[in-house]
Length: 477
Image 1: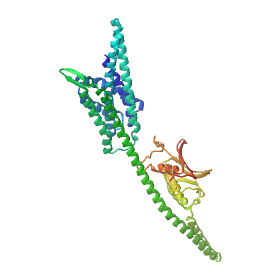
Image 2 (image 1 turned 30 degrees about the horizontal axis):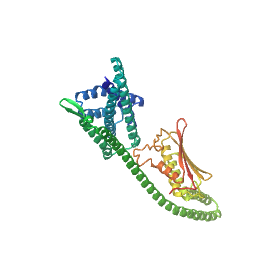
Image 3 (image 1 turned 90 degrees about the vertical axis):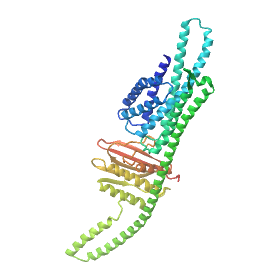
Image 4 (image 1 turned 180 degrees about the vertical axis):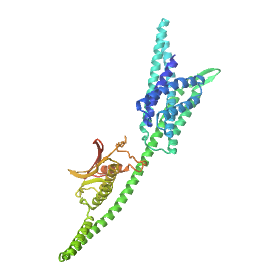
């Protein structure tokens, strides 16, 4: 009765903790609560009907039970979660490995509890006078012993899986096969050792089951130590993998940002030359037009009317050489002018009230990266909006703080990354795209600032507002 009750309690803990563990990694096909209850119920039933019978048929061979466990976990994942086989395989193997190895820690504690209870019973028997009292105390010992084991098992299982899930990479990370092998192999090794432990802990001699602890008491300390060491290796492999992924992403982002900076620098040098040439060209053209106009004023009749029209068209053409906005810096003039033209090609109304902070210690390269990325994102988002579309850019100072605000219309929903707090790119290649906002934030933090994002629902469409703050006095190169 005691063993059955303990098994059922362990099965229930496995089902509840397992359902929570799965949801940390996988995306549900159905409503979250439905998946949670469905997984808990199905897995509990399978453990009670299948694993319990397997354990009874061959109690000294865990291999069949472990393989069946992994298969059923994978089947339930396919049924309740979106298909991602390699990730589902890692989750299944790590789940089964964790609970199998923790089980042997509980086996040692159970044996130790039994030993202590037997010693205590010898003392208690001297004071017990009736069989009724023996039954009561036996019942109390069983309940207490089972409750302690179940609670300790639940605690160890929850802590272990919590650490694994917290240290794991994001749900949207696209794994490669060799990366999954790096993650899965430690759990496979843990499973193999757990199966081996059972053959070592329980020995059958002359038809009798002998527990290794009785022959070699020191193993009561070595078995839990080995189990904890294996759990530590599994956790360490996940942490190491996470660090490698983070370093790789940081290196990739740094490389992209450096390339963007180098490209921006080349463009700025070209823009400065073009800007100087255009200023000279505008000056010369206007001088020529004034000279021609003076000659025309001395003529009369139909020829003068035709020449006036021609001069007017030429003046209009020359005026196009002027930038729509004068910000106080040729670089920001050109960037805003280019983005305005891009927006107008897509029928997006563009307005700007931007002044370059020429008296502040903010590098024009950084402001160029911020403007280029922010306006590019705004144009891309506005192009999908319904009805009239609008982009607004403005800048202002508050003390030593320089602010840039970009507001644009958009339709649909924006998903934010739970770790970075930044919007997730809707493009298929999220590794390459979606770095624009990160580069903006990186530039802001370089000047002890940050970014703020707010979304306003206007009914048929929404407004996305991005505010970038830079503190001009300090910056981190």
